[in-house]
Image (cartoon, rainbow, N blue to C red; front, side, top):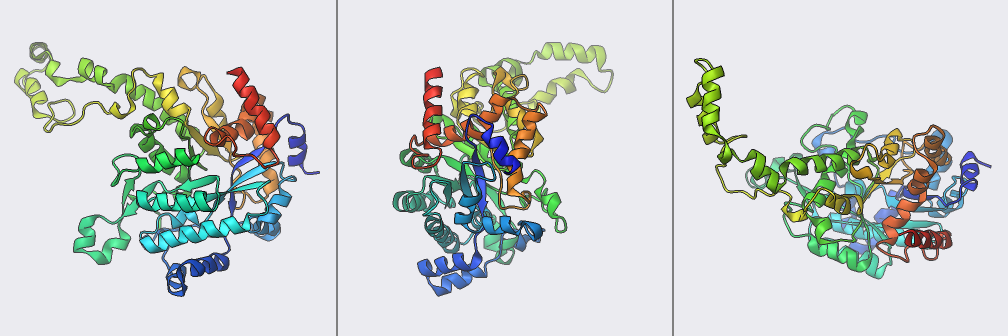
Length: 473
């Protein structure tokens, strides 16, 4: 018996993996592209340049288990084998995400991006059709326009029956003036546009569609490239460090500050593979910003029109000497800048979309709908459950995310022992571990769709958990 299975059997709850991966077989995916769009499009799909490649960024290499871990490599490619081996890994049920979508979602060419997502979803529906009791695949939803997102939701959820979906979180486009004046440079330059705040189009119909279809919004964005801060041409590890966390932070800020969680209460958002440390910092930082920069605090403490210029002049005469004169000090706020008058009219209330009346409202808008995928060996996971660190004693909703199939999991049977090591070392207690490995991932999906786990091996235990949660509330 594996150590993972021993740990599992000693628990009073199941273990659900919130983020495993399938390794798509290129030849098979290409065949699905050909079936959907024909040989000419399939050829262009096969020969497409990956986003990291055309900007001269060192992209991932040797990113899958190999050598003594060949069985794990095959497992991540064969859903039936994956399902068969879950018990030895100590996992009752797994949510499985695409690997190809990490690059596919950033392809700028509409036809190739859309056909690629359609082929991926069709293939997933076929290869996972016999293992739904153990594995739930996540569809891939392109987001370069609301229209393409809505169309793929209709297909993937409405026709193929997917219960989970992964969404693109940003558009990476060349600036319009580059496209106009220097089109030969367009592929090497990008500007990032979010889909939840200051977006090029209104994505509210997509969020509403997710509510209507009972689909939680999972995201899995890589941030290599961008403005150059993680775009080494020679070192993949440099580019990867903090990569998912930075991208998740960006999307999370857009969703929150853009008021999406205010306008769509009940819609859950999952930020995968970036851990929870960044989220704890963001949550606390938002509260501290609101305390100082809510609209009432701005007017009371920071409005330059309320400066006592007589007092400024008096202090200058007393302490400024012949250089920092009263005239100079009193002229400063008139010139604008950080502490002066505004040169243009702007919206002063930057929390307006959130309709916040006090900082405790942030719990409902941030803590409730946001879930954070954490890998098993990430020691910062305990931060999520430390009420002493988080304002109002909040626990962030960290979820166990194995990352099975990728380079950082050389042995899939080590994921559960790595996670349980946090309990053995006192980083989290048994209640936190239960939430991390079971309760939070159940709530992420069932708050959206109460029947999400129906027909799976954990159906009865999920129902019992939800009943206990309801009774306690």
